[in-house]
Image 1 (cartoon, rainbow, N blue to C red):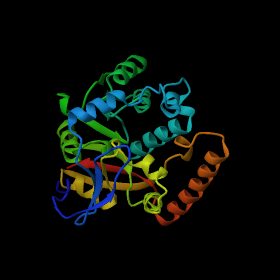
Image 2: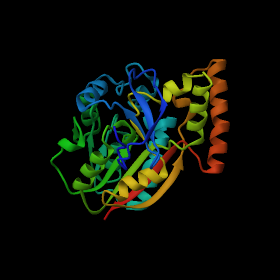
Image 3: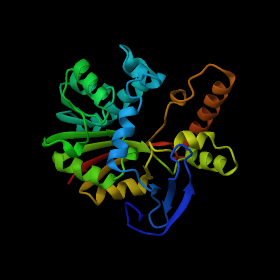
Image 4: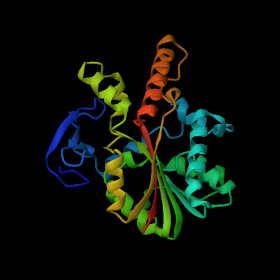
Length: 289
């Protein structure tokens, strides 16, 4: 399978995710993109995300995002911070589509700000529940199935890394945006200090962190240069790429000694990463040309 971005066929095998048997992560020797091969098809992904715990029936992280005080949780604060960051570019949220809208907290903020919010969520149960609770339309499927166009803003929060064809996703976004419309993205930065440490640990036989990071949920991983190239080659002008960090307690939530030590270690690592510009997430603002 050639590189999804530059079509180079010279790829280097990097890692075999234990939760995606028979699949490997490869790095393109041309542009540096990290991608899974063989790639799951659309039917595989649709099935996977119908079973994914978006509703929080097993995972405390998602459960809290459906609660009455969701925006006061650390994760809810992250969503509010994204909203404020995006608004600093677009100034006003008009007709806005959140792709992969999950519990719909970003939609709630856009609606409260006076924007015409709509969502798109592959998990049909989550789409139905968020639409009912927030009072906005949420399409149960992919953006490629949405006939509506003329959006002022499209958000892809923690979505780009989950799709098997990121170029098609960006093309679909562009087709549904007005001229001059904004796209906002949050996605992991695979050049982050954290990723380098995790892959080093895997090589040393400590595979737990890598097993958490890499699997069927993360199919294509970008760094600043590759995500900028993806957008520029598909009709967008990148306005900004900023670093961001995941809340350590999102995954390691327990009060045991092990979880506390991990949170402390990650906190220190994130401080260093911020100082050297190698945080584990990227925020991207780009405008349709």
